[in-house]
Amino acid sequence: MSSNSQNTSSGSSQGSSQGKSASFWQKYQLYFLLVAAIIIRQIPIVSIPLNWLETYFHEISHGIAALLTGGEIIRIQLFPNGSGLCTSRGGINFIISFFGYGGATLWGWLIFKLANSHQRTAQVFSGLMIVLLLASIIFWARDLLTMVILASLAVMFVMTIKMRRLYYLQLLLKFFGLSILLNSLFSPT
Image (cartoon, rainbow, N blue to C red; front, side):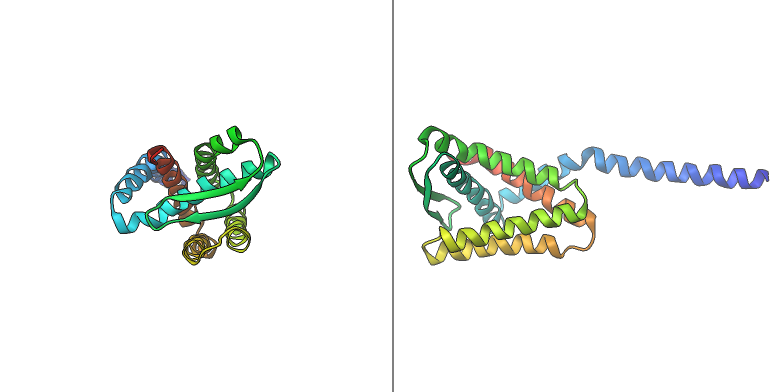
């Protein structure tokens, strides 16, 4: 009987050492992902899709603000260099103007926070992002380049839906969220 209690105690000490390493990763994961996002932001070709992602959320936020204040979206354009343009008519200009950077920051935060949710919730959110991107292609993209960029962003979210392991899904969504937040902070004004 005492040997069982010894086995139990040694098993629990191993479990606690594994718990310490897991908690170390959990404790510093934000910093590791932030450093990775900063490094990837410096790599020209690799950073382009992430720049497009932030720009899309910036521009769609202008558009959503226009819709919410009684205006309409005329067109959304995304350019190869990571810049973009949302043309709207009507609405409250102050709110529409503010919502670009404010909205991109909110999108980044939302994606980062939803990454910690249940796998199904994260996948449903990715599905909603695909629907939003496809709606943007259908209703507001007027040029082929913008359509191609939006389609490539939709593929990024399709990748998240296809992930079977929650850990990798969460990691990728957290990385997307942090990249959007980081790019919204460093975007030219």
